[in-house]
Length: 127
Image (cartoon, rainbow, N blue to C red):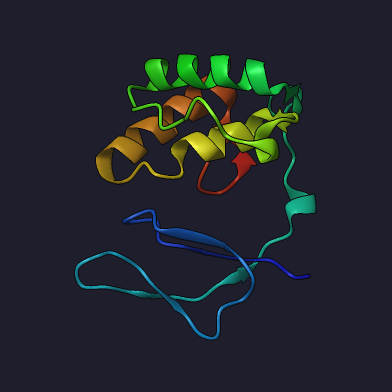
């Protein structure tokens, strides 16, 4: 399945997924129409640190530490159920942590991640 990326460099609204029926509208004032570009996950080189698989228990510990470091609320729950009993990669953990973060805080967190991991959460590529 082809994947497309729609991204506004001004407001940082980003969508990566199936091709939309038309352009994406960003959150800028005035709003802009953004045309998607083909984006293949297989082309994204990641560091070994981001590919590292962490257990459910280790993920909770790292999530808490990263939230504290980046100055964001930890939105995790004590009980997640069976869907969260396996391992996950660090890059997936990072995206899970930052997905609800918006505005200026997201911009600051994005820069922290670039500094800490050399990874841009918006382009999903190493810097």
